[in-house]
Amino acid sequence: MTSTDDQKAAARTKLAELSAAYTAAEDALDTAREALNAGIVEVLKARALGPSEVTRIVPYERQHVGRIAKAGGVPPLRERTVVSAKSTSAEPPQS
Image (cartoon, rainbow, N blue to C red; front, side, top):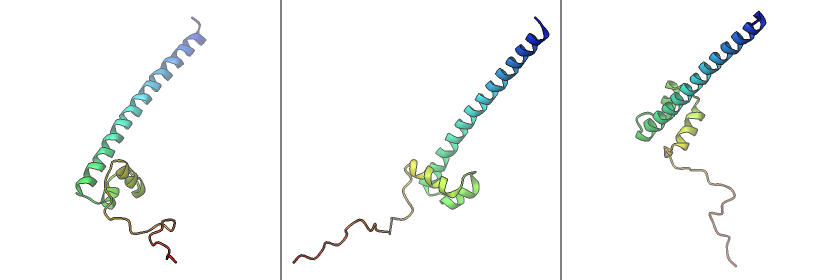
Protein backbone atom coordinates (compact mmCIF):
# COMPACT_ATOMS: atom_id res chain seq x y z
CA MET A 1 0.00 0.00 0.00
CA THR A 2 1.08 3.49 -0.72
CA SER A 3 0.92 6.30 1.76
CA THR A 4 -2.08 7.75 -0.11
CA ASP A 5 -3.96 4.48 0.34
CA ASP A 6 -3.02 4.48 4.03
CA GLN A 7 -4.30 8.04 4.41
CA LYS A 8 -7.57 7.16 2.70
CA ALA A 9 -8.03 4.09 4.88
CA ALA A 10 -7.25 6.09 8.02
CA ALA A 11 -9.69 8.81 6.95
CA ARG A 12 -12.45 6.25 6.30
CA THR A 13 -11.81 4.60 9.66
CA LYS A 14 -11.85 7.94 11.49
CA LEU A 15 -15.10 9.04 9.82
CA ALA A 16 -16.74 5.67 10.48
CA GLU A 17 -15.83 5.88 14.18
CA LEU A 18 -17.04 9.48 14.46
CA SER A 19 -20.25 8.62 12.61
CA ALA A 20 -20.90 5.70 14.98
CA ALA A 21 -20.31 7.96 18.00
CA TYR A 22 -22.68 10.57 16.54
CA THR A 23 -25.40 7.98 15.94
CA ALA A 24 -25.01 6.66 19.49
CA ALA A 25 -25.29 10.20 20.87
CA GLU A 26 -28.45 10.82 18.80
CA ASP A 27 -29.97 7.59 20.15
CA ALA A 28 -29.12 8.62 23.71
CA LEU A 29 -30.64 12.07 23.10
CA ASP A 30 -33.84 10.54 21.73
CA THR A 31 -34.10 8.27 24.77
CA ALA A 32 -33.50 11.16 27.17
CA ARG A 33 -36.02 13.38 25.34
CA GLU A 34 -38.70 10.69 25.49
CA ALA A 35 -38.07 10.18 29.22
CA LEU A 36 -38.22 13.94 29.88
CA ASN A 37 -41.44 14.31 27.90
CA ALA A 38 -43.01 11.41 29.79
CA GLY A 39 -41.92 13.01 33.07
CA ILE A 40 -43.45 16.33 32.07
CA VAL A 41 -46.76 14.64 31.27
CA GLU A 42 -46.69 12.71 34.54
CA VAL A 43 -46.03 15.84 36.63
CA LEU A 44 -48.68 17.89 34.84
CA LYS A 45 -51.30 15.14 35.07
CA ALA A 46 -50.66 14.84 38.81
CA ARG A 47 -50.96 18.65 39.09
CA ALA A 48 -47.79 18.59 41.20
CA LEU A 49 -46.45 21.61 39.29
CA GLY A 50 -48.01 24.00 36.83
CA PRO A 51 -46.80 24.52 33.29
CA SER A 52 -44.94 27.72 34.16
CA GLU A 53 -42.98 26.05 36.94
CA VAL A 54 -42.19 23.10 34.67
CA THR A 55 -40.89 25.55 32.06
CA ARG A 56 -38.47 27.05 34.59
CA ILE A 57 -36.96 23.62 35.20
CA VAL A 58 -36.83 21.97 31.77
CA PRO A 59 -34.97 23.19 28.66
CA TYR A 60 -38.21 23.87 26.75
CA GLU A 61 -40.25 27.02 26.20
CA ARG A 62 -43.75 27.36 27.63
CA GLN A 63 -45.47 26.69 24.32
CA HIS A 64 -43.53 23.48 23.79
CA VAL A 65 -44.41 22.26 27.28
CA GLY A 66 -48.03 22.92 26.35
CA ARG A 67 -47.69 20.90 23.15
CA ILE A 68 -46.12 18.01 25.07
CA ALA A 69 -48.93 18.16 27.63
CA LYS A 70 -51.63 18.21 24.97
CA ALA A 71 -50.04 15.30 23.10
CA GLY A 72 -49.78 13.40 26.40
CA GLY A 73 -53.47 13.86 27.19
CA VAL A 74 -53.11 16.34 30.05
CA PRO A 75 -56.48 18.08 30.53
CA PRO A 76 -56.43 21.89 30.48
CA LEU A 77 -56.36 23.72 33.80
CA ARG A 78 -59.50 25.67 32.82
CA GLU A 79 -62.26 25.10 30.35
CA ARG A 80 -62.31 27.27 27.24
CA THR A 81 -64.19 30.51 27.65
CA VAL A 82 -63.92 31.87 24.13
CA VAL A 83 -66.76 30.98 21.77
CA SER A 84 -66.07 30.78 18.07
CA ALA A 85 -67.80 33.38 15.93
CA LYS A 86 -68.62 30.58 13.50
CA SER A 87 -70.69 28.65 16.01
CA THR A 88 -74.34 29.57 16.34
CA SER A 89 -75.08 29.52 20.04
CA ALA A 90 -78.37 31.38 19.69
CA GLU A 91 -81.00 30.38 17.17
CA PRO A 92 -82.37 33.11 14.92
CA PRO A 93 -85.86 34.34 15.83
CA GLN A 94 -88.65 32.56 14.05
CA SER A 95 -91.34 34.56 12.33
